[in-house]
Length: 222
Image (cartoon, rainbow, N blue to C red; front, side):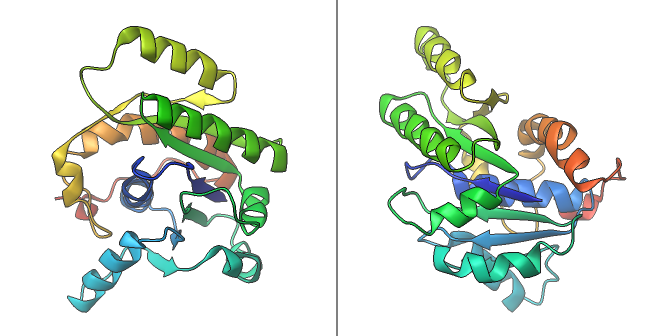
């Protein structure tokens, strides 16, 4: 199964969400996961390498790659149907290399915030994606949401995005997200993201990978 996490606008929390989802799937669902870090900053790949230098055993592999590498990588990675491939995309739409990634996607997670720039970028990203892969499932994730968001703005944005896909509960803006890495999710963060990830697991990931409920692995959390 291929899950891509993307939005045209940078700073939407794509990389953090990618890492948290990978931690959840390996720690809570004991899935086999591979993360492909295609973001320009490659912050996930850097954290992964730092963890390996400390002789920690990583719960999943992180591969630093660019869009042009994907057509060569995908046939090999897709051989294991139960494996979940999570791709952190770069924040852009002007690269033909995105076409192969979009076509391969089974699920697209699109983090966004309730401001005009983020909304416009999210809509454009969704339109381009659906033109390339009309059957793909898009789920919007309100991310890094502050407590002072106007109700009217939220209502208007939700209505328009729900015409393009589904939406999860909001993930609030919290400083302890910065403590997450490729080895573990802070215990204080897990209750915040778990309802969102459980929804994704039940609706998409478990049916796609054919996996049943599994026992949680507490070693993945502090």
